Length: 280
Length: 280
Image (cartoon, rainbow over all chains, first blue to last red; front, side, top):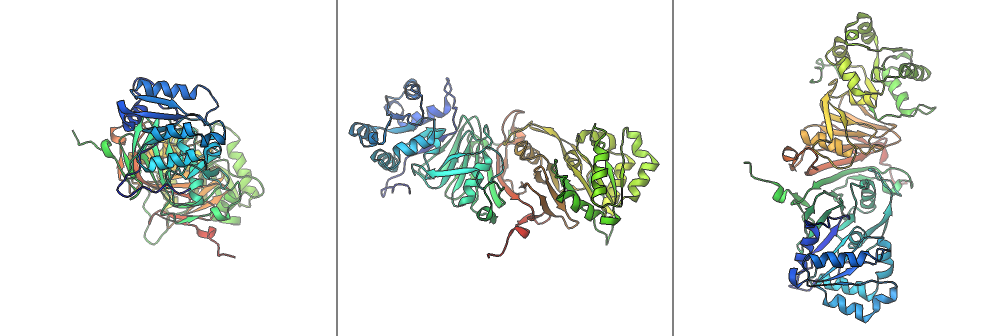
């Protein structure tokens, strides 16, 4: 699904994919920054725990965002596709100043929400300016082409990844999470080999990409964001590879970004941002 | 140690680093090709098993090269640094048409051989044209800057790798082996972050880089060779990073090469080689 059109003069809301296992202690740098984007003391955050099978996922983030000073936090679960048409739920999305997806299984999100009025409304609200974030599965769902599942390992194989349509808030990148912790470079590369137009973003745990309306991504958290740009790929053997074959890919660009560093998804340029200090 | 000077009009011999666990069965593509480079039926191969603590390492390769048709195979062990001055051993290196290092611990090779007349002679013989190959630890030892040990993981940390001087047959690259199998991208990137002048070569198991006198590398075997080119690195936080910190690296180039693909270490360009077939 292509991203919703942004009205003339308007700006798309922030996208905040998080690599999972973000710090929930006193520091909580990522969640705190998300609350600030949502409006701080005026924030009304809708938490969607649908990816998770645990009943505690929703209430846990409700409490966290509450402690971080949000004015109102509501848990909005979708147990069936029918719930995606429910007027009360749609009204809450309409009133929210930010939406947050918990972790779990991204296929629960795409199968239960995909194509429903609720999904359409989330897309429209983001296009109108409100931030949408999510952790782990909740990060994967944000983009148009979502990694549904795949195998571990550093080298791409033809069958090492399965893509599925995501919420489509952006089509500029493919997101993967728990990146370093689960050795997922190979499956991200395989996803890019299918069609190198997108930029691959591998999020470590406790690490987030804060993607502004201008498509500049800034890293927050304790780990790295691995950006893989296959836009200048010179050769790929993906089309000829058998399922378990490794894939030849020539001409990849890669950047390892830490907190403070930025990447512009439009110009495809990385910058050390606040990491580059003046010599003392 | 800088590579030995190649005499005017002469050409350096091939370098054949292998990622370990190469096929030793009927196919034995890598070892077979090494024997061919060594002269085929005229080959006189000196096998140096010094990296290994196992008594079987030498005789095993002796038998393998013998079965693959080499004219003469001799095992040449170095138990002490004194052995590196032994005239009989030096004479065998002088007569060999190729030299092969088995796997084991690369620090045994560098500590026992480094700086001895035997090491000097191997360097001189390669500069004069004979091929030198090695598997696993025997691959690591070939270059000037050798990865002595390091930690697993896809992201570089300041202390994730320790370098030591190798045999110095080339200074153009840093080699790592068992690459995909042991998740070693991070330590190779850390090695390049120290000084981005070299090109990183990550060899999968049963995969070799056949590096010709013209510094063009061709891949042989069932896995991939990951080439990392940090020559255009735009930023690195290595100098400021604490030991366990991840390292920010912007502007890396990466190529995943399969059998038949080539990489020119002088021009830093990758090519699909025989992988690029005409459409049928």
